[in-house]
Each structure stands twice: as structure tokens, then as C-alpha cells.
Amino acid sequence: MSNKAKVTVVIPNYNGLKFMDPCFKALDLQLCRDFELLVVDNGSTDGSVEWLKEHRLPSIFLETNTGFSGAVNVGIKAAKTPYVILLNNDTEAEPEYVGELLKAIEASPKIFSVSPKMIQLYHKELMDDGGDMYSIMGWAYQRGVGQEIERYDRPCHIFSACAGAAIYRREVFEKIGYFDEMHFAYLEDIDVGYRAKIAGYYNLYCPSAKVFHVGSGTSGSKYNSFKVKLAARNNVYLNYKNMPAPQLLINSIPIAAGIAGKYCFFKKLGFEKDYVAGVLEGIKTVKKTRKVPYRKEDFHNYLAIEWELIYGAALYIYEFSRRQIRKKMAGPAKS
Image (cartoon, rainbow, N blue to C red; front, top):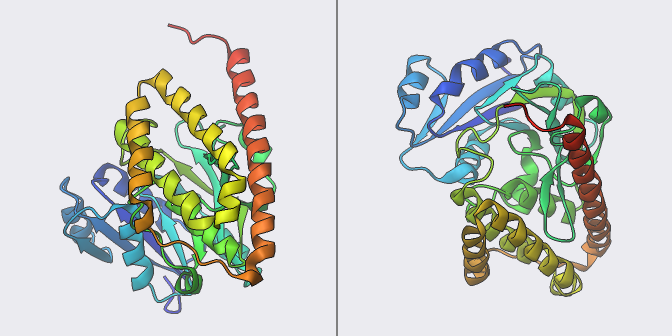
């Protein structure tokens, strides 16, 4: 690794011992060596601490689990490089990954973050994430999830980068704030990307940087009580913090419709009580969050964001429809 590294790869870890070996082996094969490594362990009890010490990897050991946001904030603040890559432990990066992300973010000082092409590790023909999107109904989603990887070969603007494998311009955090630790986990990357957009920065998707992702490596399955409740609460925070009062009022009807839609969705899965509990907790505690101060000079950025929220809703409907058609064409699963 270079003595004058440009980027620090920060890996948050909580009881992810089983992912360690493949994750670090993939980083050892990077063609670009212009990076430093830093693991932030969130009070693991599965042998991760001993493994990291045995392999003498640069690490910061926290006594308790501070959540994704708390861990990556420690790593970002400890880094000395102009850029940081936040990389989940349940990933395996392709050899060009670091170099392509660096090339992309160095293209303009107005780029805050770049998201790679995240591919499902166990279904390598399908996308996991092509950048994160947000909609006027208050729904956040992974662009391209479950779609064929060939459909996502073009670079483009996205609402925010997925913090599971993205590169960030470190100095911008000093201006807009770090990851919100009230979030603990989930939607914290949408939130920080939103704040960057308000400040006039933008976020990109870079398909030439590829990483394979297990998904739900720490919290478990795609949907569980913990995730549903936390994401619902954080959704309330996200809208309140980043939308000025007039924008919140304008969007109140689609946001309410989005909440109703999510309730119906989670009722089918048996998580409706967790979802309602999360929304109510968010409403009760939202004033504890730090609301982005409105500035007149950012008005045009808010207008652009409003359009993106409308576009995000249309894209969600389109991608959801494609997934449903694909499922029908695939037919019922064989027993």
C-alpha cells in the first residue's frame, strides 16, 4: 500500500468473523494499491477481535455496538486521506474496484460520493444495488435490485450512494455533518447523500467498480422486526431533517400514502406492529434530530431534489413492475 495513500478503506464489523477472510483476500488483489485499511469493530463477541489482532490489521476496537453510523464516523474521523471507502464486511471486491472508484470521484470536486455496481454474491447475474434512490412517498430503495446486471452498465447520477461499498470525499463531512448516529443503522446513507445534495454536491453510480455482496450479513434476513422498526423510525427522521416546512407540507399527502402503502406491505409479512411502532417512535423523538438549516442560496437545490423525488417514485414503479413480470415469467418454484 502506498505511503501517500489517497483513500482509506473503512470496514465496520460487528460479529462478522465468517466474512473476514474472503473480504480481505479480495482487497489484497486490488490493482490499485493507493489505499490504507482501517477496521472499526463494534464490540464483537464472535472471535472477530482476536482474528483482527492475529492478522495485525489496523483496527479500532469499540467496547459496545454503536451501530453502523457510529462505527463509520469513528473510521472517517480517524482517516487522514482525502477520500474514504466504506465497505461492508460481507463483500468481495473485484480487482479494479478501488481504482475505478478513485477515478470516478476525482473527476469533479462537486462529487460527494460514488456508488459501485453491487452484485448479489449468490446470484451473480442479478444486481444488488446500483445506487440508492428516494421517492416523494418517502420510500427509499436500491436501484436495480433483482434486475439483470447487463441493464446497469452506464454511469449516471443517483440520489445517494449505498454506504455498504461507496467512496466519499472526506472534507465534505466537515461541511454537512457526519452520518447521523440517531439512525444507528438503515437509511443513514440516504440521509447523508440528501444533505450533500442540499449543499450543492452530487452522487454518482460507477458500473466499472464492481463488488459482490451477501446482503443482510449482520442483521439477518431482508426483513425482520429490528430492521422494519428501525427503518420506519429513520424514515420519519429523514423527511423531517431534510425537508423545509413548506416542502414537507407539499409532500404530506404522498408521504402519508407511502406510510399507508408500507403498512399494507408489512401487514402481509406479519411486521405491521413493528412498522407502526417505528413510525410512532420516529414522531415522538424527531425533534431530537438536527434539522438542516434552510438557506435561500440552496433554493434551486431543493427544487432539483423535489424533481428527483418525483422521478424516484416513477422509477420505483417501473422497476417494481419489471420484477413482478420477471417472477411471473420464471413461474412457480419447483418443490
